[in-house]
Amino acid sequence: PGNMFTRQMEKTPEGLYWFTLKNRKLLEAIRNDAWKAAYGAAGTLEVGDMLGFIYSSSAAIVLDDCRQMVVRDGRFFAAKAGMEESNGHGGHRWINCHFMARPGTNNLLGGDGTMMNAGMHGSVMEHCVIQRTTDDAFNNHGYWKHAASVAERSITFREGLPKALAAGHLAEAFEARTDAYLARLTVESVEGKTVRFREPIGEKFAKAAVMFPAFQNAGWVIRDSIFCDSYQRVLLGCGPGLFEGNRLERVGAGLTLGNGRPVDIEGGDPHGVVIRGNVFLDSGSSPALRAIRVHGAGAPLRGLQVYDNLFVGTGSGAVSVNNAEGPLVRDNIAINPAIGFGLLRKPGTVEPFSLKRVTGAEAS
Picture 1 (cartoon, rainbow, N blue to C red):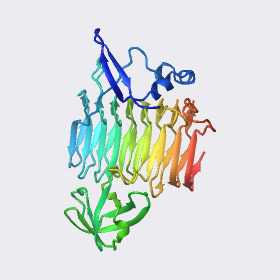
Picture 2: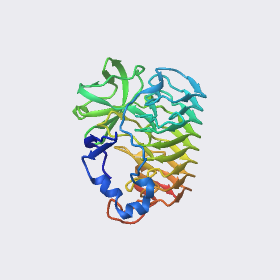
Picture 3: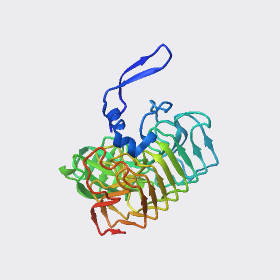
Picture 4: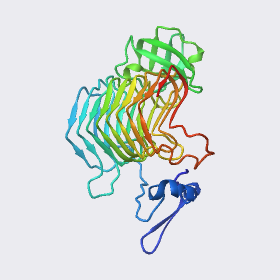
């Protein structure tokens, strides 16, 4: 309900600080009696609460263009620093690693806790802990590449291309402004930022955004890990993959599964994703949010399975699926799934599990 952008900061003789917000909506919402009844002290500003006014994307450990590395049994207490892997073969293993505040301090990681970017093979993350991030607790994605110019059978892109992009790799093209699916293309050759395809390229590709499925962290596994006290979310933007046996506790926007909009930089094709046996505690608990939000841009998402999960204390429902083909959503338990329902918008009917624009769904 609003943001904490500041208009003015004043320091008192006692060494305290007063912040005047640009927008009063946040303070007005949390002072509302209905809001206090729904959220209690956890949803209001109290004396002694910690506020984070920092943002930084840095990393304690980075694997760049690496192959099948193993990082295990590490404790990383660096402020504003998480873990990152980018490009290349991938297929790493992160085992029993904790990225968190040093015990006894109020440090924040700042930025993202984990970045898994555009590898050819997904990595395995087991028994890890990600705590106190001011952006995504986990971010798994590929990249959209945007057309700068087109010729009869080629596209020159604005951004750089994957180093290993080669003949035979597939490309999925969308119209960047409308999200409309254009075509599946096959790479014939690569020179610099220009890709020649086997199929003809017309003017309809002049505003295209293209993803390359071979660089989508395929086969990733996140298992038996903990994500807690994070401002934003766990973001799964690639597939196939398995999210199993994890705990999300006080993760602001819960878990988001989606391919990102083609006008953006980060994106992917999160097909074949299985989310099972997880526990979501007070995650996605803001009035307009759900613990799991699935949204397909352009082409519908395929092969989604969400089952055997427990949801406790979500904002306006446990699971929302929008634009998917053949999703399976069943055998989930939602306890108190609408604690903020109706606080920011006109109340309707509570839907703990919402499926819209889906075909061939299996739900129970």
